[in-house]
Amino acid sequence: MTYSEIRAVALATLLSIAPEVEVDELRDDRTLRSQVDLDSMDWLNFLLGLHEKLKVEIPEADYAKLITLNDVVTYLQKKLGAA
Amino acid sequence: MIEFKLPSLGADMDEGTLLEWKVDVGDTVKKGQVVAIVDTTKTAVDVESWQEGTVHRLIAEIGQKMPVGTVMALLLAAGETAPAGVDAGGTPRPASEAAPAVPAAAPAAAPAVVAAAPGRRMISPAARKHAEEKGVDLDSLTGTGPHGAVTLEDVERAAAPRPVPTVEKSAAEKAAVQQAARAADMRKTIAAAMSRSKREIPHYYVAEDIPLAKALTWLQAANAQRPMAERLLPAALLLKAVAMALKRFPELNGYWRQENGNAGFVPGAAINLGVAISLRQGGLIAPALLGADGKSLTQLMQELTDLVKRTRAGSLRSSEMSEATITVTNLGDQGSNSVFGVITPPQVALVGFGRIAERPWADNGGLKVLPVVTASLSADHRVSDGHRGALFLIELNELLQRPEELDK
Image (cartoon, rainbow over all chains, first blue to last red; front, side):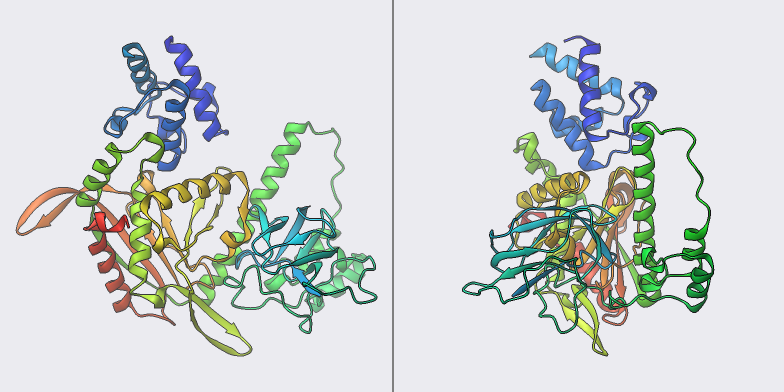
């Protein structure tokens, strides 16, 4: 999958959790959780949604690496490429 | 004849609007069965029946707003036949004192201070006079004063000329207006409940910094063995620890009741943790995790996930809305260091957790950096004292140092 395809999946997953998000206003290089009001349960559900849609395992130890939308998409792209 | 009444779904609920009947005349109703969906100012709630019977008559109509205690339906008990004269049509009637009370769908969280009898409007003399002068129908007004009293402002608002809309609003604009109105209603409801709490409950506060290195290390190891969908959040550990600690401090788990001139503490029959859940459109609801002390961490996590999802989707059950015996608010990893909450009446305590963060920690003459959470207790001084409150937090701390024992 391309970067933009994975990004689209990530945004769709995000919208299913936080429907109020204006995706056009999101900055890929900024902390996602400072731009979107996501509590720890929302964040877990976001990662779980990505796992279910893309069949990518995300170990808890990697959660700390996923700060920005760009981090998330790049991480998933590497995982998908390695699969 | 069993009267099915609109239960109180929390101390901050005075009325509800029937959205849907889930049963029809002639249906058999079992205990715990959802019989109606009722909209409160906060959310839509599946209302359960706590008596068994056969639906004889559905009195309330869809879309009808009614005060708590209104008889919504009549059920026939097993073997009972309908007495003459009760099957005629009519509008819902407020419950009278003489009417046999349905064992409330909400036995636990009935308001400590009983609101004005629904059948009797409380109207200030000034408001009544003003209404007569302006030709305002008092029966059509919703009072915003104490216990639903109609105030002068309510009459003035009703008498004010209404602006004539010049342009038809789009569906999106209408939805936005509806959402704003709902948010305003919810804010008003929260304001009323919290004002009442601060007015009536003599709060005291204690706090304890709790190191979580052991708990989080245990959690990380446990999660490494679990599939993603079954991983635990620290919140599950915190909730279980609260539930276990409450077993030794029953004076923090229950209700302050004021009935028939008598006031006092009534311990909760179970440990039902009301979990404060923020709504995306603003406001919050604190539905209950029932019997939290008897559940494994996996069960608690599953139920918490489900509760958050259903709270935000507006599909809670009446028992979840009414049976919390204490509230827990957890600011999570995006919150502040600490929170000192306002007790939800008629409960007598609230436990707050701030953000789990790395902090310097002095230990045995040395200094470390550890993940720490500040736990706080807001409690009702009519029922407990600061010393017991502090001991509760120490117990909480000790339980969190033995996380493996919480998973039972």
